[in-house]
Length: 545
Image (tube, rainbow, N blue to C red; front, side, top):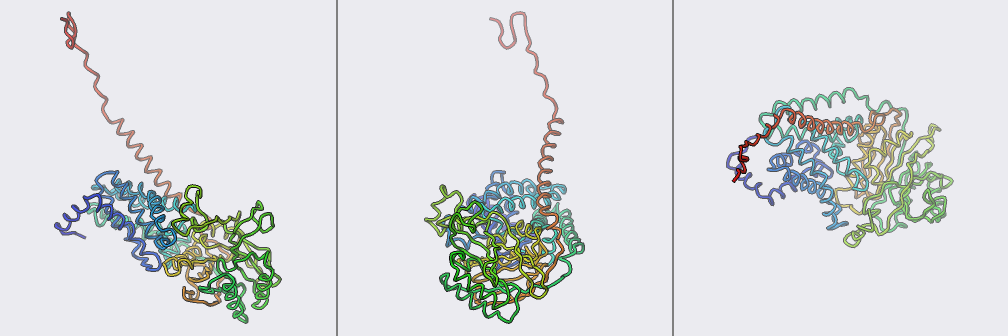
């Protein structure tokens, strides 16, 4: 693509202004937001970073490249989390600016690898270095305390079959590497004519690698049974009592449809069941009526020093997946371990507690569970037991949690969620899409059950099963999922793309060190200083008087 000379000169003059360049970096960094639901332009992900790459490579100094990387990262975080603005207000800008700093070193690397007139060797290296550096940024910001893995580039490919097959081999990390590598190759094609051959070769290598994974990956394996799961979505109902009543009504409608399990969404029960035997009795009666156990989610305060408290007996507000059978509580319970920053707790509350005064941050920190739990439910038709791996809301974004559950024996993954606070935003659809990736990564069917939508179910290959329940639905639906006992390469091997990316960056650092050593060895030694000439009466510098 050739830009007319006059337009190129005007663009160069505009970007020479630090202010306009900063605005351009913010906008360029925000562009990838359109690859996620609700827009869902998954194909745009493969060129969405190109404007940002082209801008940073022209940075006049390394310091400016750091700044362009930071501003672009800030724009990216603001765009991806824009739906949090009504809750965090101005604090969202502070958080985005702090997290945007993670992209500053990436900007420096972009200028290092793509700036000026890169050689063929540097162009080829950039196809590995820049995706690896991006992946390190995604890994660091995936820490729960920094917001978790929301908006990973690989997650934008949740409905693309070849990307789901890649996820089964290397998780969402491998998909992110592919997306950034294609963007890097596209930037080389556009901006560096001398590097077009290696760029095309690199893009072809990506295509060959994807094809090899597609042909070589065995997939989730054959099914050895079916499991019928009913999802109950009450819709927008005010108050925990009315929400319980509506969920109870919808569950009774499942009588005669023979589900093996009924799943309610996050915070579907707003009272501690141990303190409300009347609610437990109603749930047990529902279980008998539909012929299946019910997985509810209790969002309530539990007293200290009880068996239902935390591991050390500490009381507080817990979010817990609780299994209820025909006889009442079965004893299977999972307490949410990873909490939403500011939504369920305030990190370093003594320092950041002021966030509660400018937005709807948590006024009281929720309590954490201590371990993941695999639950067991009977299969009424076969008489065998089926193992469930529960997750609560935000936890479905973490690949390691679903992987651990499957390694512990889970046959079906279940995420109970509630996004009613962000009902008319892009968040519900984005959250539901994460279940497709977790299903593909683990080779297990996954249920995403919510209070107000979007609820969806995905098979072990990540393909959607049945129709999803949207944000306008108040309904109960039954889904039939296959039971698969094989494991994917990702479950067996783990996060090998992360270690590979780290190895690439270590190799880059070592290469730089070796070059510096070789350069210093080749530099000629300085000539010895000339000896001062002396005379009989004194030196030439200070003649004797």
